[in-house]
Image 1 (cartoon, helix red, strand yellow):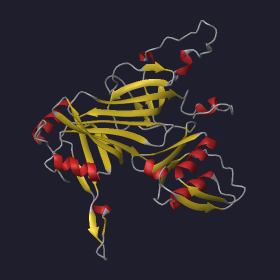
Image 2 (image 1 turned 60 degrees about the horizontal axis):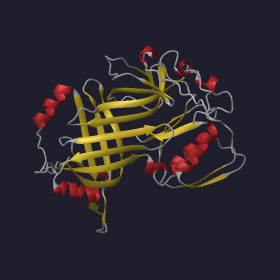
Image 3 (image 1 turned 180 degrees about the vertical axis):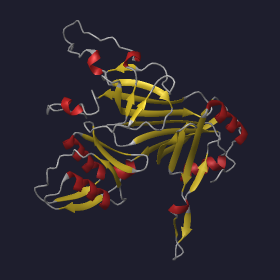
Image 4 (image 1 turned 180 degrees about the horizontal axis):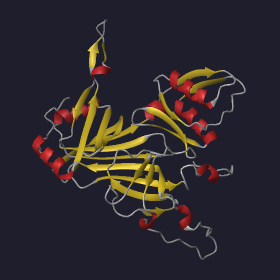
Length: 353
């Protein structure tokens, strides 16, 4: 692990003891790493990439501000990271060669883990308040695997959607590991053979559209394809109260219930969060008295889950290693029971996408 003497003399210094004091005071824990490629000589004397020995630059002792965002309708996860007052050499090396970042964050008592590892798509330097410099990094997870990857393959007649998913993953230029796939995908066999030539994302989106499903790449780099109508396992529920991490008051919104909590890496897309419906802040309905608008709104009570269990459709983690921000925000949608959504979507006009 390289440290590069990371602190810029123009910025605020910090040592491991002050970092330890902060961790003890707030119970927070984090590790933020930026990766640079390593190289080696092959048998012909050519310089080639040595992927097994990439250089990891640990910037955890510096002031870092990060935010990750993942939504059910998009395959990629977006992350922005700002690192303050890094010295010129380390900063220059990362601007030229940095290709990946990893963020682990949470709390020491069982709520710590990886929240993002992804590929850098942009790096730039800015100045703040005339004194501090910040290196800003934008990274994506899943984009390289599904939208810039290529697949060249074919399938025989009679193949199912599950066969298609596995064939695309195995025959992509960069292999894709298949993870959790919905057991409820339509099993309509191909009437004739099919040729695949393009990005995996193109074909996975087609499968999801025809199955009212969504796909994304998980933190452990596995492809997940799930329908919102899939049954939720009994133990896959995070109970939130003011004593277990709930921050503020959950808010009702047209897109779901907005819930804020202390940063928690355990929150995943399509997992369940259980809260007390009585503490949700209601919202006034809007009416258009001109007669031109649509006043056919459902009563708000019909949007709340009878058991207070809300499925995560959007999750965002935000943190500031020298500030107050250390939160997870989600938008949850009521299922009316863990196996209730199939009843809602029985009508072919309805969709979960």
